[in-house]
Each structure stands twice: as structure tokens, then as C-alpha cells.
Image (cartoon, rainbow, N blue to C red; front, side, top):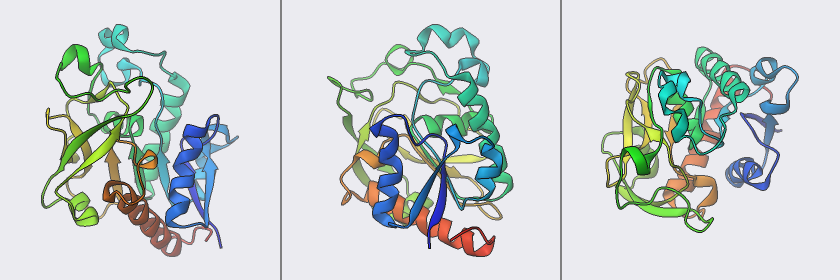
Length: 241
């Protein structure tokens, strides 16, 4: 029986297909539901057992109260996508549905709950650490997994190397979240609920686990945990399975 998982965007290029193919390594029965092409994305979300917020273009700076940051964006924000995904996040949270947010998805999740973003790391937080692609390929850099976090519990590692392809990042973390991993230059690389009691599963990572070797615990463990949470949600809330 298939496990329906909603993706904020899951088609249009191989990089978007990578997200659901990655989850299928944890559970081949994952059925991707691409909300970006759905006639009724809210209804489609209701039929699913989890939401994955995928990567993509910069979020419009006015969404987090910094319209003056517009010149720092490296691509044109997709404002209809921003609007849709903000609605999806709020509804998924209301449903207590498992949420996994990756790269842009993590940034959008932070904005949805009142956080702000660094619009351009090289300009606003210059550092020797490279977060953006080099010659069209992902950068790789270390992260520290913070103790006593759920991320540490899932991965059982204190540090690791991750695939990175972002020039924006979390600035002020929304009050409902707590950092779960940081890079050596202090950038928040992962976050989760500060008080998870009574809430659905949520994990946000700035790196790209779907483009990392499966044996890397900062890849496989995330897919396996999210799929497990979605399976439990499907049983509890009688979603298709």
C-alpha cells in the first residue's frame, strides 16, 4: 500500500525529482504528490501523511519585513509559490502533519513562524566558509549537531559533512524553534520545535540530504525518520496507506 507524501514542488527538473526518489530509498512505497501542480493543493495535502518543503528560489524579502533586501536576491522570487507554501505550512501545522523542510524550505518555514533571513551571506555575513555552489557543484562543509536535540537523537552524530547550495540563511530564528545544527561560522544549519510536546514532527535542514551519499547519517537518518513519522501519522489520522 502506498504512502502519500506531499511535496511543495516535485517536478520540472531532475533536482526536484531527487527529493521523492531519496525518500523512496527509505520506503519504496512513497507516492509523491506534487502540490505545485495540483488544482486544489489544500485538498491534496489533506490526503497525505507528510509534507516536504523543497528547495528553490529566494523568498521575497517583504515576506520577512525586509523589502530593502531585494537587491541582494540572486534570482526573482516566485511570489505565488511563496504564498502557496506559507498556506501549506500553516495548514500542515494545524493538522499536526509531519513536516520536513530542506534548504529554501527551511528558510520559508522560519519566515512562516515569524523569523527573518540573511538575504546574502557573502554580503551580510562574509566568511571563509563556502555555502554556495562552486563551479556549479554543491559545496561541502562541516556542521555541528547540537546535543540534546531531536536531530542528535535521530542521527547519533555530533558532527558531519553536508552538501550545501545556498546564499541565504536563517537570521533571527522564530521563537517556536531551536537550533539543532550550526556551521563553523555560526549559521543555523538545522532547527526543530523548541517545545515539541503536542505538535507534529518537524525538522528543517539547510543542507541537501537528497544529494548526499545514503550512508551519510545526515542523509539516510532524516529520510528514515520522516517516513516513519509519516507512517504513524497515516495510521493515527487514517490517511491513505
